[in-house]
Image (tube, rainbow, N blue to C red; front, side, top):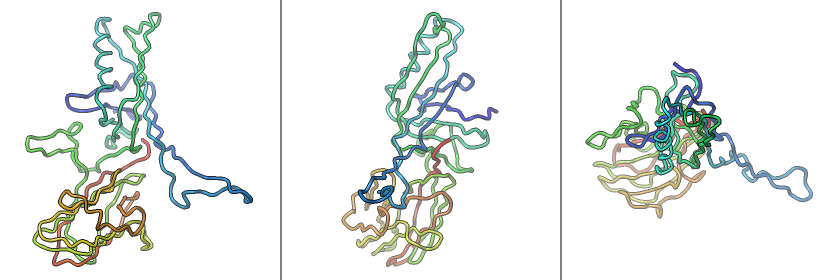
Length: 296
């Protein structure tokens, strides 16, 4: 076991580059960088924080790493460089990282190559020992992982029936008017959650979803004025570019924000969500999310 933080690989399946472990010189990210906004106001000391009590938004994510390609025969270096350079063509893929505690589960972010540098210097024998510096850009600067007990199969193999074993954590429960559910984010950063309501044989109207803090105060939430009939699905997706859909079609016309931007984002730790409305009976609620961290 190696007890230090390191990158594992980029991509998956046929398009994967394994980053050498023992020749990694360094790795860093900027996921703890935020963008505060405080402005001067004439006639007063200090300034005004435009975000109030809210957290500052994150900077665009960057991951940087340096490692060495080591070959025994000079003829192998060109092929090794060609394999490395192919990453530029892959677009956005999962970049995997192992935390310093080797018993922790690997974490990933969705990244794309920003640049790769392989300076070739004859006096340094770079045809045998090539230094590589790679930079990735990350639109969502968080590391994600599944909790203990969830399956990892390599980097997410897809079976013949379409089941992906590296999917977000899924929980299924039944809800009705007055239901209270608890979702726990084991990371140290907020993580988006997907709520999928399935009416089945029941009907539903005036749906109200509230995320409350430990004192019972509203943090986030929404209401929907629509009336939902049997065998319908209401999707509430709080990931970037959030969505509110009925059977796959936008239902924003019936979406009213109660707090925040209306969409539920799980804070670190336990999160309480209250559900109310006019239900003809119990309906199914599926939730999907991953634990999230600011840095490795």
